[in-house]
Length: 357
Image 1 (cartoon, rainbow, N blue to C red):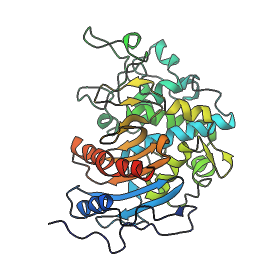
Image 2 (cartoon, rainbow, N blue to C red; image 1 turned 45 degrees about the vertical axis):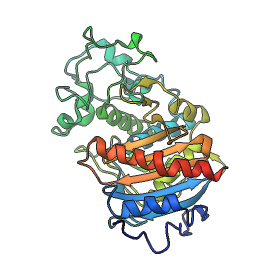
Image 3 (cartoon, rainbow, N blue to C red; image 1 turned 30 degrees about the vertical axis):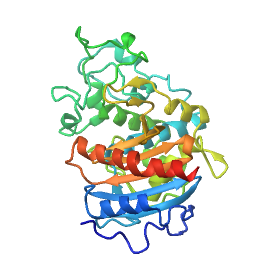
Image 4 (cartoon, one colour; image 1 turned 90 degrees about the vertical axis):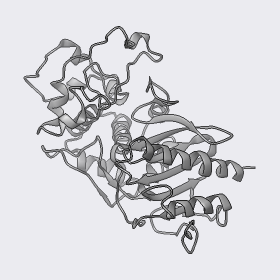
């Protein structure tokens, strides 16, 4: 039997965090059903669902002991925020372009597996998970798999010490791939982006607060730290659901917030344009943002942040929509991702489409 949803079904509460609210979905039977199924744990370990439409929060609920104050460990969704910080450096002119060489900002010396090709790795290569080093979190035998990185102290050096990737005959080389890039999911490369931000700004932690979080009114968050004390830009940043929603809305606003351009509009456009094929389902990859489409009878294009456990922060420009789905189903594998995809496909996207009819 489906248990009852909350007493005030998914009614967003006005706060002082900068969000306006509107009860567009109050009493909506489809969203009531979704709310009840999550409450009954038919969708496992969902911790929050927050929806912003036309710049206003229209649905908000928290589950499984989570509240509006909970800082969610959204795992690799952090990577998209790292991309945003690169965007702020571009906006300020501190980095000239994503074509700049990553090694220019590196202090790592005495590399293992030295190779002149490493000097040509660009910031864009790291943003698109397509650099030339052998690093693949999805491949158990990969020397660059993130589990191996966590065993040593210097995670930045771990990346630069990796050998160059080889391409056996059965794997497509970059020049033979759709976008001219060979994708392999590499958390260590995003750690290097954090090192670049830290080098350019003098302090990643202080810079992130000044250039991004404080601008968005985000005051309550938690960085995980690497063993050398660098904020972990590859995963684990703790943020509240409404603050995650702001990151999505910033991109929907083409990098602008309260009249100030925090990221170049051209960078936002490039970030949400496909640069690499992922090789699974209908996903493609931008600058640390996933690209796909969601919906049941009508598919709508989206770009989204994603983390282990199934958390998604999805942006639908054509619907003027941002959706935050957080989940702690960390041991669920693809099931955790599939169930938040189902929430978008069968409940949220169709009902937002119906609002416009």
